[in-house]
Image (cartoon, rainbow, N blue to C red):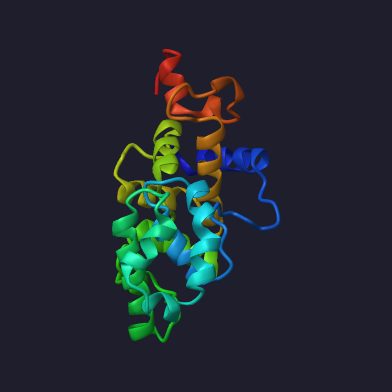
Length: 218
């Protein structure tokens, strides 16, 4: 897909899913520390499940220093309802300890430094940088972004790193924050994994997947 067509798809999706009050994230955080911890917890589970444990977790461990003093076994009961809670308990405690030891209790603001933390990959770092700091160095690729990008034709790959590079090449940097948000919204509401709602899709006429199932040419 060329940039002109991709940007037309972006404009339609933005009109369909307007950004309200500047909020482009789905996790309820109040500061960068909460954003980092909750994003680590969100791997392979729903945002709703993560938001449900937020209050209990941060009422007990409101700062990196408080969480750093905990043992993973103490944290586990607070996040037991989310997937892989034992491993994630270790990740967030170890991350808090690294924040205190290496970064003065502050969440770092660079991709390299964030990725040095336990449980933090490129997707998590992109989310924290974008939503907590307004820094756009890339585009977070989750399961919705991967599926919708491939279907529409923004990418021909299923590899998250390649998808991210393809999206960054198609769209100007100033809309990278929007791209993640819009593709997630569209993936949840219309372009679902099973039984996508083509009749409601505002980009159906631009979509490679729709053309293919209609018997047209790519």
